[in-house]
Image 1 (cartoon, rainbow over the protein chains, first blue to last red):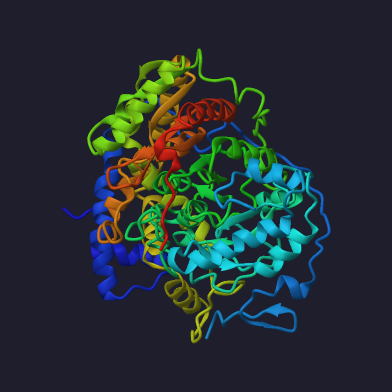
Image 2 (image 1 turned 30 degrees about the horizontal axis):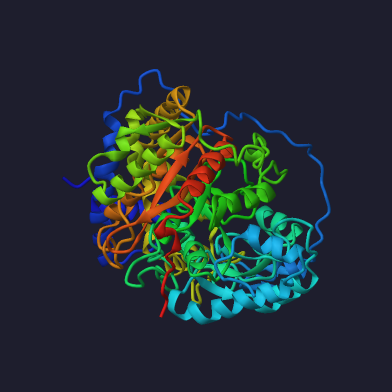
Length: 97
Length: 484
């Protein structure tokens, strides 16, 4: 049985802001179903009373002083990798048409 | 006269005795790189000009790395030198600053030769996912070098550099080191700062060295390890003296053999080679005991929930606006996101982003992500229990030796399973070092790994160095790849 159908693939792709062709939807549906079918084996594990681990070396909150420090980069340098810019600003496509 | 297969230790001694200069060392390796790179493709770019400047001003004696060339995996930021993560998305990207690892190497006088190829975004086990071109295994160019740090491992094996820096999220330093016959260290999570890595999975990523010897691995770790204000997860870092006990030998050490790493799927040739290591260590005075890591079989499944979840989040920043690939003709903002991301990401990145988005989405979170984080706890506890019985664990690095190009590309899941013996150490955050331990009948390197408790890199170096000393006259150690 497929773990994920074509509609779900399209939904997930939409959430992740990926545009897929019909052919890609088909390909990923098969591949993602195989992978999800495999990873489901973790659901067999008894994890009653087990705490989840997100951080392995036992750190909890790590604080730093909330202090500003100057950047030694100029505005031009910071924008050097920006594809579209104008007058020292990043240029963005229209949000509303 | 500089032998291309010199260790860092040897080069450093030659430099300090003024037998050679940093510029001569650099020229030797640049010449070799230019000669073999068209065939091996271990480097995406060679920063010759910058390297020459660095070599000319390197202060010999400042550190053991001073004046010695290094290759840097392309997921690690290098100021002024194109860094792409081997992805089309970041083609042409010039970082404004150095990763902390790079900063520390440069302060120590290291000379960066260039950026090593890898699977795009470090997603893969073969470098076949590089958006540019795959790297070839120097021992057999019809085979993969492993991945994702395949370019770094191949560069060291092909004698293009004495050492390189890779990253290991699920085996990406150790598996290619094993496939290429070099030493690869995945340090304890947080021991080496992640600042300036192009993040893959932030709770798992560990930068580390790929070297010719265990001793060299200690030399490099000594320079790059330690807490960094720019990476809050490095705050737990415990730096040790990595040389104090390195020559102490294995007498009295308890070495655990986990039966779960010697079962189905293991190439008998690999298993046999690792058992020979156990025997040699026993003869040298180590006590070999059986240990069990019962949740090993859930490693890949757990990893393929947690890792893509973090990947989908980390790759969310690529919007085609601030930096990276930007679609040419898009109607509006949302359309621009869709177009830029779909054009800029390759198939494997898309697969992982979707997988991660799925396991984190409403209705699936508990069954996948939450459950995976709980199994992660059990995997971590397996190691903690095992280390109450032994000092170090010995296991194969990978189930097989280097495979052929195309062998796993049709079936992504089969590629994922290649990391069966390496992902658990990332999930548990423990350090592990892959060390060459012989060759297969097809003349392919075999790797074994030593695993220790958190921040016990000193113990791994001690056991690993002892093994290298025991086998230093073995015939297989004299082999060198023939790159024609």
